[in-house]
Length: 115
Length: 110
Image (cartoon, chains in turn brown, blue):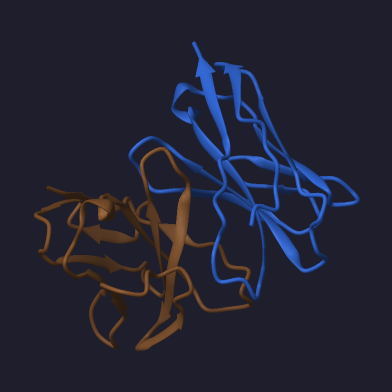
């Protein structure tokens, strides 16, 4: 999974706090995707972004969750007022622009634990 | 929704070829077949993808049947490090996400 960098690898928050997860895509990749994986489950798509644009947020919870991919800097997944159910592994993937068949390459995720 | 069917689990002896099957009987003409694997506590790792021709890279081979309704991922000489959950995914170029179902849990046995 070299290339897509996520930090922090582990994040602990108390209920009601905010969590910020960062993702730097592979060099040359302009498409970023966020997925969430609950324990013992498969990855679930959350949001797809290109530079400064949200393309598809069909998998994002309606409240408390937001994502951005600014012109400069990493993509950020932000969770406000975290609750115990937000505990999960959050994975970021990136892909290069092209025909749309390019594979997504994943980082090693941020494991979020809510106390 | 899941468009693929995979066995829940498989074992393979170390050094032997691991053949992982996948059924995708409703695949559309513009959908590719992708394979990923996830080793415990890591992110999914891209392995290979193809449309209708067989594909090979440094990691694996992908055999797609002529009617494209099924495929097989082949790891030619399995090692202990190949123990992982393997996901077969079909996706078109208009789909934004990869749907990760339950995959096949492959255990390579010494």
